[in-house]
Structures are given as structure tokens and as C-alpha cells.
Length: 237
Image (cartoon, rainbow, N blue to C red; front, side, top):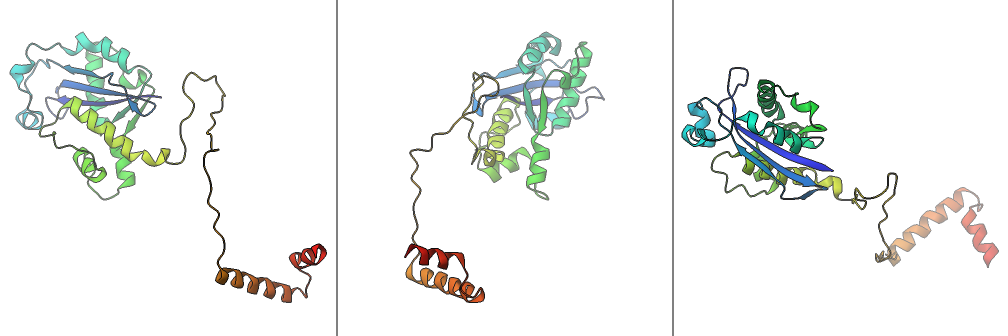
């Protein structure tokens, strides 16, 4: 399964009011293993960032002047994301911006390109109701090192999100292990070799044996001596 962790930084909070994407970070994971095949762009938004946004991401307007516009990277981004499962924290925000950018360059909407979108904010709210579920809060709660995150950055946040997601979903793999890879024929069943596992035998102690015999005696008395185990014992004697 191919999953992409995606994050964006923007000039402000509203794509409908003209704010634009200035950074896109994508981190690839296949079968729950990070591949290193990541994608990262800084973009020229053709407008300045709001002062509050600058305080969040720290990416200056001057730095972005010579960066490519979204239209120049749109095909590469779409090819990279195509048919993948996308994981985003607060997906509604990022998708609204991606849809607006795609619309401006005449491309199809985001969800028509990808296979599925998972919102880790929704997941976290279900798992930790009533608690703070920002990316930083989840890093603290799940033991993910975010000490390098003094400012928001799309690629760094996507990398942190990948670690958070692995921790959020770790229970799904505690008992079930993926033993079949994509090369297996459709319908093939993976097998786990358990021959090396030795199950311990725990013997009842004397007190437990006596308690067990007392229960059997009570059942035997209640059935007028017609219990199966007593009859079987006599036949074997």
C-alpha cells in the first residue's frame, strides 16, 4: 500500500479570499516503511504572506520571488500523488488550497487524482476526545521528537505526521502482520511459521487441584453419581 503524508504552508488562512500555497511537502510510505522518495516544493504565490502567516512559517516574501509558480509543478505533483492514499492533518484546510491551485491551472480536483484521503485530526479527535490534538500535541503524547520544529515547514511537518500516524495506528499491526507483498498472486494467502514458538504448560498447583475436585464432587452429588467423567473413570479402571 502506497501512502503519502502531505502538508502545505500558505500565505494566509483562506483560499477563497485569494491566499495561495507557498510550500508543499510530501513523504512516501510503502507497506508502513518510509521510502525516502519524498517531494518538496517552494512556490511563488504571486502575492505577499499575511503578517500572522509569516510568524507561523517564517518563509519571507523575498525568498519566494524566484521560486516556480504552482502551474510549473502541477503535473509533477499530480503524477506523484496519483492513486495513492493521502494522509493529512486537518485535511479540509490543505485540500481547499490544493483545489483552488488546481482550478487556477485548469486541472481536476484533488480527490479525483488520489485513491483516498485520511485526516489524522479526525482520527485523533476520536481517539482522544476533549484533548488538544494539534500536530505538536500529538507528537508530545505519542513520543515523537519534534524538537526541531521551531517554525512550521511543510516537509518537516509531513515527516512528523508520518511518525505520528505510525504511532496512532500501531495497534492495528500488533497481532496481524503483513506477510504478503504486492508481488503475490491475487487471492494468495500469506502464512506465518509458528513452529519455532513453544507454548508454556502451566500445571495446576495443589490448592487449585483440590478446589477443582470439590467442584466436581458437588456436580457429581447433584446428578446422583451420573456425571460422565466419573463413569469414564470407572470404565477405564
